[in-house]
Every structure is written in structure tokens, then in C-alpha cells.
Image 1 (cartoon, helix red, strand yellow):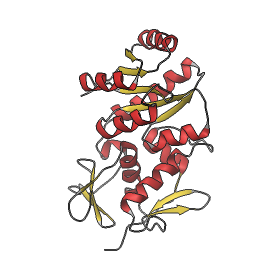
Image 2: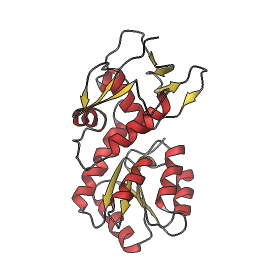
Image 3: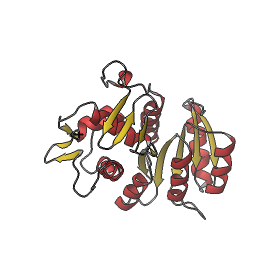
Image 4: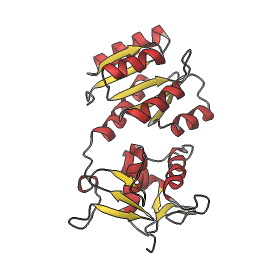
Length: 242
């Protein structure tokens, strides 16, 4: 279990570590700062944070590799930080499972807002009813194509009973779509329902995650039948006829 206020800062710049440690502590967070991916891995095995604030440009193992490691093993928030601020960094960071992205230099008030936003997503209730997902009494399992979505355990299984790994964001997206069959949902709606934030036209994170989700549930991801694109609007889930 992670402490709900613990933030692990991974940055090789001692000045940045000192600044963030002081600021986060003043804001009521429990701050843990380390200088490398190796130190972060050791800390994660010892004590799981609620969120990792992770610099991409680490010496040795970079932040993207570490983010992938964290996402595969821990259910924690990840905010990537890059000094370059390049679009490619943002896209790759989101592809490996980061929840948000900040470019240096950043305003500390913006950092606080993003930290709290990501933490709210991870700390909110996870039952379908509490997330606004309606279902018939006892209907804890839903067919998604040839797969089964277990709403109670937040897991997806293939027809052979093997679990299909989903990130938290992928699961949230799938749950929201499945609960609203045949209904076009805009990117704004999807982000509000899953992350409680508005869509930025320059932000490709939602489209990237939809593509990854299609790769896991569609018979032919290049010709999606379950999660369909609605031109000019967003996406729509169309249940398969079994």
C-alpha cells in the first residue's frame, strides 16, 4: 500500500531536488528525493509512494525506462518532467504509462495542481457505481468483444481466461465507454470522466491510450469495430454481437 501523501522525486539536479523537497513539504506532502533510477528502484522496493515525479534526463538509466518499470510493477501516479519540452518527449512519456507531463522550467503552483489532480484520480473510489457507471444488479462481468471485463476486480480477461494487462487509464477509459454503448463521447467528456480535466487540442495522450486499448481488445486494431472513431467528435463503443 502507498502512503496517500508520499511523493518520490527523481532528479539528478541537487538544486531541483532541494527546491522540490522544501516546496512539497511546505504543501503538506511527504517528500522523498533521490538522484538516480537505481536509487529510485531501491526506494520503491522499500516504500511505495502515491506518486513519482520523474525527470526524463537521468544519468545512466533514463526516466522513460524507469517509468516503464514503475508502471509494470506499481499502481502509483507518474508525472514526467523534461528539460527539453519537446513533443516527442511528451508522447513517449505518455506511451510508457505516465499520467501527466511537465516541461522545465515550470511554475510550482502548476506542479501542485497537477500533483493533486493525479492523486485525486488514484485516491478516488474505484467501484463502478461511485464512478458514475451504471449496471444491472449482479452484472459485474461484461462481454467486450471476445473478452470479459470484470467490473468488480477491474480486470480484463481473454476468452481462454488469461488476464489482459491494463493500465489504470486504459481500464478507466474502457469502463466509461462500455457503460455508454453506442453513444459518441467527445475527448473532453472522456477526459472529464476519467481524469477530471479538459482536453487540450495539442494533447495526444487520449488518442495514444485509445490506440493501445484497441491493440488489446480488437480483433483487428487497424480496423476497430468495438471502439470506433466518430469524426469531429471523439469515440464510441459499439458492443459486439455474440
